[in-house]
Length: 374
Image (cartoon, rainbow, N blue to C red):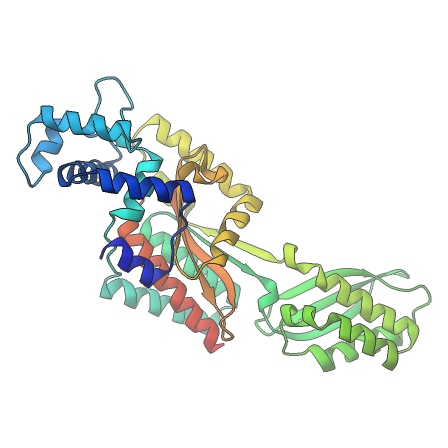
């Protein structure tokens, strides 16, 4: 399946305008011989991570070319910025620009095998029967990690869960704890200031008022009705209780940035295929990147703006500029067809894109169907 068909199936990939223009021109300027040699270099890199020389390529090509002819083409590819020689007289490796060009213009995507599809569906379904939503997403992350030998990542937000119960618990004369219990069993505590002189009955009254109106709704839905709730509270409640409701709603309105959850599983898989000291240093830097959760969340959030799979390669994103890593990510939707999270795989730039892209897409669809059922 060529790139055009893949884009129709998985929605547009992330491509900067500069790379898109470059890719179009480079593809037009490459003859079949150049394309086959470039494909051989990239395929060899994705399989081994090692530079490939002209003699080895001559044995791989379906056409007969001398090593000297291949070296001339490799030099042309190097001048285009698609490949480079890591050492003098060494073979060639694709540049990050070359990898982007290959993924966007030349890569043929496969599909998950029947066994992989059954495994994804069975494990996600099994997790949904005895776990919270967070547990299901953690299982999906672990599943992707195991299938791809990369680190599985999931980003979602607590404001997607539906509320079951809201209660205020007094801590002292000026503070109370607003406790939100969701339908999936998770609990969110928010510290709120309470008006001076507030009687204990006002805490109960404020909780009852909110439970009657907000039960079964998500925090996202709550946010849309905050102003209306404030206005009605002024009319139906005494002044002090209305202030307490106002404080609680205002605190929950600020949850958006804080409620994002990042789940990472399988980092140890990244240690399985180290080939040199520089690989170990790259993985150390990637682990450091993954610990900087805010940057990972920001990157995954960019995948929420598209319809399908997105691919981030190396220094295209500042998060991976040092570790030389890639991420493949796809959003998933709830029953209202709203994007409520992103899942994906992080690993070295020589990820098996052809296999992992459709696998990530399929897993996102399975998780989405589960959420729609809920």
